[in-house]
Image: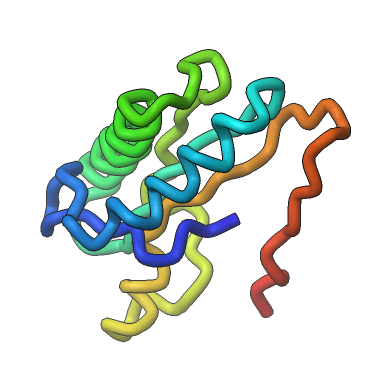
Length: 124
């Protein structure tokens, strides 16, 4: 599930103010289901060096995890992984495509069966 509205300052892992309401809802939902485990994935566009994007995407995933922990989600519910620019969902040749590629995704890694998880539609 892509966290629509979660954004960061340019070339930074600092969350923007507009990200907070989205993450507050995620924290509330995850806190209700402590047995649900997720991987917080960070993704970047292709601007910049590959190594820099990999590091930045990891820092962004960690930043989201830290925010969720600070809002009541148990640390052991989450792992983080930065994917850099390796899994684009749009064309990096346009600003619109690059914006789509800069994203945070929650991937369920363990669902004990008591949580209905709605998958995002596949990207064509």
